[in-house]
Each structure stands twice: as C-alpha cells, then as structure tokens.
Length: 359
Picture 1 (cartoon, rainbow, N blue to C red):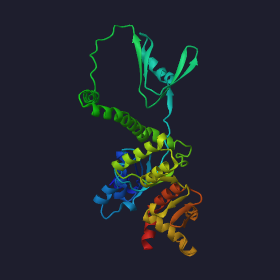
Picture 2 (cartoon, rainbow, N blue to C red):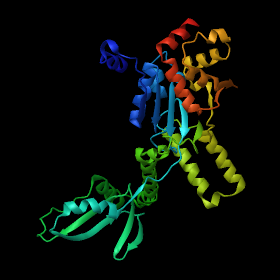
Picture 3 (tube, rainbow, N blue to C red):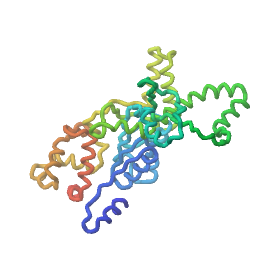
Picture 4 (cartoon, rainbow, N blue to C red):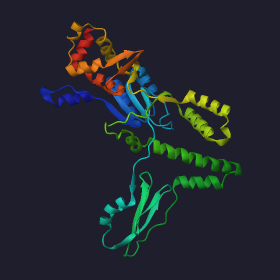
C-alpha cells in the first residue's frame, strides 16, 4: 500500500519505488512484519522477537524466508521476550557521549535573567566525573543518562510549595518491607539490588541513544567488532537462566577450572556468539530472487549474460560475488552491502521479468 501511494503521487511520470523498513524495539516488530507482508527487507534494532507471530498470521509465509537483519545488544528482558527471526548480529556496548556542565549552563544562563544571583545547586546522580577546570571554575562531566537539575537562586521571595508525596512504587516498597514477615523482608532486601541492577543495565543497553554510537563511523556503519548470534534465549525464563549463569561465573567461588567450564558449556547452549565475517554471508539470508540471480550469473554462457538487462556497474558488482559452501562471498563490498545491492537490483521491473522468464 505504501509503495502504491508513493507511485500515485507522481502521476504519469512516476518511477518505481523500493520500500524497506527499519525500527527499534516495538517498531522493530512492526518493521519486520511489514517487510514480510510486502516481501521486502528490513533492518531492526533490539527487537522483542516476532517469529511466532509471523508464522501464525502470515501463512504460508515462513519466518526463515524473511529478509531481515536484526541488531541486538546483550540479552535482556526485552530482546529475549519471543523467538527471533532473520540474521542476528550482536552489537558491542559503548557508553553514550558525555557533556559538561559548563556547556549546559551556557545556554541556560540567558534564561536565568539579571534577577538571579548565581547557580546555587546541581543534583548529580552517582557516577558523575568531576575534574577541576580553571581558577574558580570547576568542570563537571555528566553522563547523558543521568539526571541533571540546575537551579538558580532568585532575589525574590520563594513561592509556597506543597509537600512532596511518595510515588506508588516507594509506598508499596515501604509497606512490604515494614509489614511482612522477617523472612520476606530479608529476601526482598537481597532481591532489590539485583533487580535494580537488571533494570538499569536493560535501560542502558536497550536505549536507542547508545545503539546509535555503533553507527557513527565515517562510512555510516562500523562493522568491526560485531558478532553473529548462533544461539539466543527464546523466552524470559531462558534469559533469567542466562543472567544467573553469568552472575555465577563472575563469583570468585566458582573460578575452579572444572566448575567454570561447566557453567560456560551450559551458557553456550542458550547464548552463543562468534566473530562475524565481513565478506561472507550464508545464502539462506538472501531473498529468493537474489539467490537466483547470483546462481544464474555464474552458470549462464557469455551470450546469455549479454541479454541480461543490467548496467555495466551492475555486472562488475555481480562479478565480485561468488557462491562457496552455501555462502555468498563478496570480494569488494562487504556482505551486508552486497546483500542490499542485490535486493535493490532484483526489485527493478526489468530484472524481475528476466528472472520470471528463467523459471
């Protein structure tokens, strides 16, 4: 529908559009479903997983036929909610960029006005890095994920303010800790820091702000230090098992060689990655038309190749990609670049007609 609405806006001089999809979190699920419905490709980030939904609602379409690349962070309660689909790539975690307090207050100084005497207080969450700057001017570096509040002391009389009320979460927590059995209180006291650590880690890794830092390279994407995912948790209980195994492996009491090896072997059954080859991609992650064109290109005779409706640059690109051991190997472009190039190539009407004539 989107492709039809785009072509209709051009009138009689319309050109064919190629529509692809991308999304993050819930948007990743929507992008993957639309790509499956329109037989195009999608690039998604931190998807909760939609394999079961696609197979149940888009029969006879199979999830293994989807042309999707899914970028994931370390397992967390969101990206392990449901089984995944497509080519899974692991992104390394990088801290988001930091800003200085001086940079923030430079713009806020204009809003304070002449009636304000000075910056009186700043509330910085834990983890802020404070470094001395010039004489009398400290430089404070604060992570973007922290909360920063800068208040100005005014010469005017303070306004009357109502007392603050505890949030529902704080109220419930205090009630549980003060009005339950001692055993429950001890259990909740031990569980609370673990849950707090889990939620904070999930928020940092799942944030689109931190994901963007992996694509700030000069070429638009940094494919170095990316891993291909071979095993991934398919529901929340498997994620909790992975979480407990990782915590156990970090425990100093479990550093015995045999104990540690047993934990590592158990972890590899649920979560396993290896370095992703930049110039190699399994054929099953190419769409059917791309596979067919690549296979025909290397079995057809020269006189037959001359009839293929391709530009000279397209022929050079196809000459740089070969099929070996059920994988596509690209000698010039990276595997992902070649995958996208083939998808755009087979979407052309003249190439599509040629592929249909060869059936």
